[in-house]
Length: 391
Image 1 (cartoon, one colour):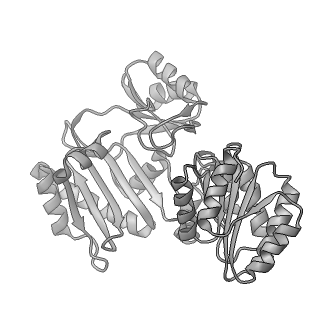
Image 2 (spheres, rainbow, N blue to C red):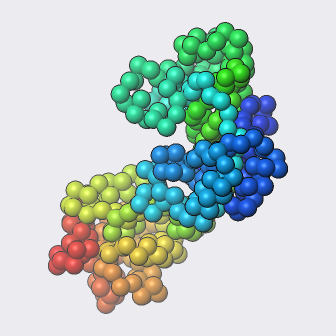
């Protein structure tokens, strides 16, 4: 689960960390009022609040030096979709703006805490090259990326903070403040069950202060039950509507941009299914794991979610009947196809307990359901069906 920038900064402020003064607005006139009535000054930064990186390059972050420019920028962003390299091609709706004071920047840095799954440890990552091009810096100049591995018992240590401050070239006068900030960020990361805490950039102002200019927080969905105060910050308007429905139904669904809807039980099998669709020249419209205990009701809900995507031209159902028998799954598929009045081809590959009984039910249903002998056969038939070709 992602937090908006303004939500993440509120958490930072509650922990005593410096952020620019700012106001969240939902109308252009409120942006002007915020600038003149609270922030003051004559230069401000307007930031679109969407759950995607690359806002700056996409025009979602702008520095304005007049009320007229502020009003025009707010009007251009609010109520429109912002398309970045992370949310293309459809983008996300901008419903809120964060209007902040513009600060004099002397230096920019990158700082983040994340889980390195290769070593099973939380890692502090930092770089002197903060800002919009941090991704390219990591690829082109990997030696400029600094790392400190946090001990799972002792956590981040003060000596690691000092080493990072020296490596970043911070003035000695800021080493203590930097160390306190890192220790507080680590505390937030652990206690909030975050998967990512990213500050880009952390700036040193011309008057020698460390200020968090932008912050991204991503919560581990598996921990939301014990982070109720953070779960309440979820903004479903930033999530694909089908993903919201799937979450409510207890399904693991991720919307993609292809034309073949996928319904699979098991994450590994789902990824293998998508790979084979690609191998045969198609593109998956979604990742959908109905789980190992899929029932007829679960299958019906999954069909409804898949068919809500207008781009879907064929549906591939790939079920291994281990916990649930294939004949029960077949009954669910038949009921779902009948109830939904599906108009696109459906390819079903069943394997496991009572597979012959399941296939017999599908054949006797009288519905236009194609069966497949194996996964390769299923992927090939689904791609051909999506193209309007005969298998």
